View: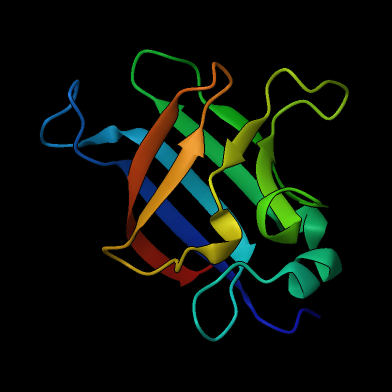
Length: 129
């Protein structure tokens, strides 16, 4: 049993040059444990890592399914990323300081895609998984 229950977090693409109004057709659905302040909880993640999943949806592309992974090292002492292919590393998408962000509706989160482009997403909802 995790110290914090798993949450289902919906992220939609925030406003950008290509999408001035943002886009509900581009984003992520993440299942992860959050602490009382709304941050990703690495201790609870270790207890339930197999259940910590991610779904990437991007208009015109096939949905991708993978895992939320926490690895020591990197800025702030740890890195969170999305792993779609455990056998390789070329499909990984790294969160930009995901451990520092608050996952609450209206907050913003950045993710670096497999091409190295950083996209900003708005947290749309956080609910029990």
